[in-house]
Image (cartoon, rainbow over all chains, first blue to last red; front, side):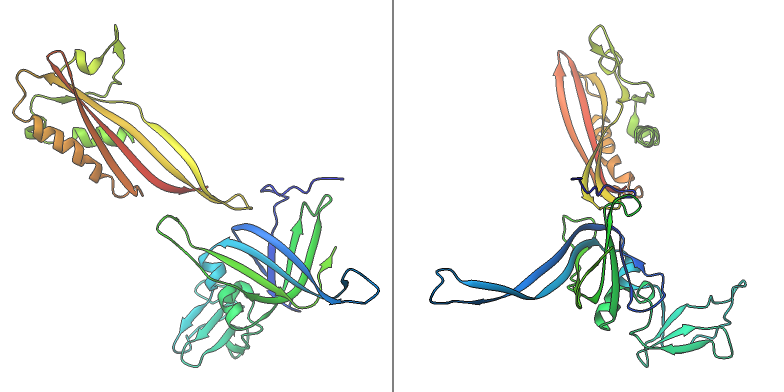
Length: 198
Length: 135
């Protein structure tokens, strides 16, 4: 038997969220205050005349990951530029050039664009494919982006485990009060299917 | 904050200070008597006390704490013949709390108490500064 440590350093849970099926780096959700990994079985219940107690059998489970986080501006709202018209840019890594992968949101057309090397600097990208670290958790929720999440329980380099799966970001409700120095929000990832434990 | 408060006290006008002077020494005691009672009309600033209480902690070691810093300004003079600028000086010292707007202090309070020790009136103005700091 062994305790599962969670102290800040190598053992603290790190929740990483990225677009499902992508090769994005993903967003390491900062400032987690608490994490709950839910696995709730639906139960089918019936009675029989020859048995005093009710009979139960599990059917499918409802899985979700719940957390409370301190709202980080970039993690919550994303890292992109909003403009009514397409900005004039040169894509590259030189001084004054826009790095490839930079995201821009056209507020006039309500569409997303990614800076790409080549003849067309801005290439339209579906909201479902804009990296979570670029569009932010709020947009990932609003745009109903299917995400892939991963969280470590304990130190993964020693004896910890990784729990991963796919699902949807939901349950965001940023809150602040006169007594609170910062905004906090619950965060739920409703899991599509089952967890993978590795 | 002691340095900042001393600087602010030294910045008071001559008309406000009158015959009072600001001393940079700590108000240590000599034969059980604080220096500000031995040396009348000398304004002393005590060393500061500070407190950090956690408010929000996060799993990745980030968080916020509530910082409270308090320090006291002491001075005394003859109670039989109060200097003409006595009340003006008291108000000016009390209002120094408003000088510290840009250091992130969310609360800047002063509690003023006066005490008569034989024929000497001792004024103590306790400054308390509070703010939120992050880890």
